Image (tube, rainbow, N blue to C red; front, top):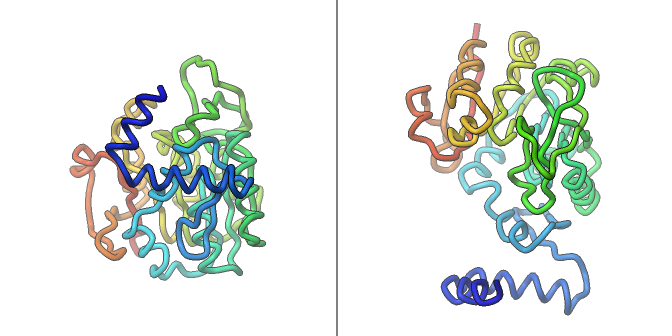
Length: 273
């Protein structure tokens, strides 16, 4: 393992520099490593160096431009699959008066999410520890503490599976008496279909102004769904699909582009009636 790690650092000097920063904070400064991933957003409470390294790429430049420049309008923002809180904190930094819900079901990751909200001193992010699914109750969840970015609802038995609270999107919005939704972000490692299936009233009646959701055919197939299923639900609710282009510009797309997509976040906007 040590030899393999040393060879990796030799091939990738950029990783070596990052590792040096990690070690300096951990041992020289004797503190838990943190990093600024975007302007005004500091993220810490990592499970390992790999998470520290990868968090810098959680939100790409074009997506960040979109989140910074798009006119969202009034309403709450809901981050389903908040992970360490990067997106929620970007939104909170942009609009500190807006109500933002950060939802994360994995107990270990949820603790880190809370730490990062406190670390940034924001007051408008409400953290909820639960999974969003097609129905309210409980669900099996793969909460591997060493691979938190890939944690998801689990259909098969596994060593890190545990039962967690689950809520449908409709019930979550009703519980919190949310009347308008400016942004609904869904990143749940292939289970986006379940989130939208449990949100018929939200999508059909409240009609979030922006739905920001992950497209990853491999993960969706692994979860047991057709790769186009989440996007199809949005189309059925009269949404138009877009990819995020240069500097946050929206580029119209459709189901025919799903198969050629490896991993992207798409934007769905409601069709005016």
